Image 1 (spheres, one colour):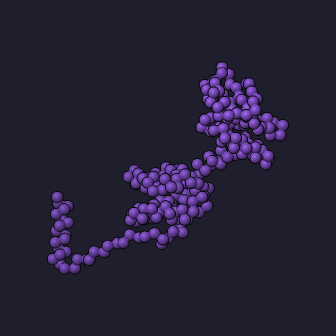
Image 2 (tube, rainbow, N blue to C red):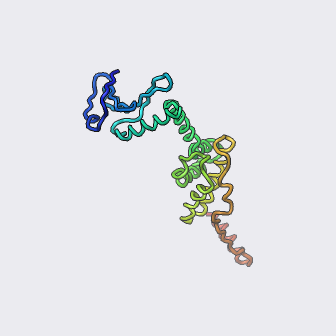
Image 3 (cartoon, helix red, strand yellow):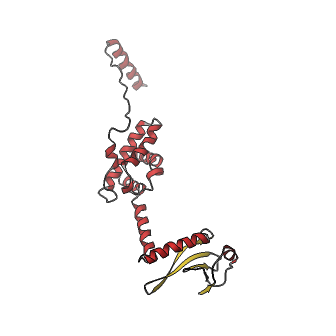
Length: 231
């Protein structure tokens, strides 16, 4: 491995770097360097010492990460180092945190919950999944369960309600509540935020029809039903 030291990189120098038969690096300042691979790929690296141990981490790929962005990221890693954290260890911890958030996201928990509804008919399952894919996942699907508040759920349910889809809003509240209640014992959340929304949403108005009291109308109605069954 060859490490070439020059005072400082520039965009012009970066653009003209050519691949060689072996990997080589050209230093910028403060531990930042660009690594050029035989394939032509150019990768930003940050070299540092944590205690007596030398280490190096990747920062990004050039030109997707510009020289200015790479320097800012180098400075951020240096700040971690001066605060007593090993940048490599801090990165692994951050990756674990992100992975945990993905596993505990509303959508991940919802899909896990759906798999346990073995007694549901295929039609019911598809309807419930479509409901969440349409009205829930685009807004809260990526969110960790614990981060979703009562206000978040109210805003979510107001969307179908604003389109006068009252029954949809009610069913959405019911399904989301079931998922949150599943998330509590499985350790993904502490409470069901939909439980505080009782009486907040609009309700479907039931239309009551007058009952048949006249004997002639009752007989006519029974005859029409009988004819339907015969045909």
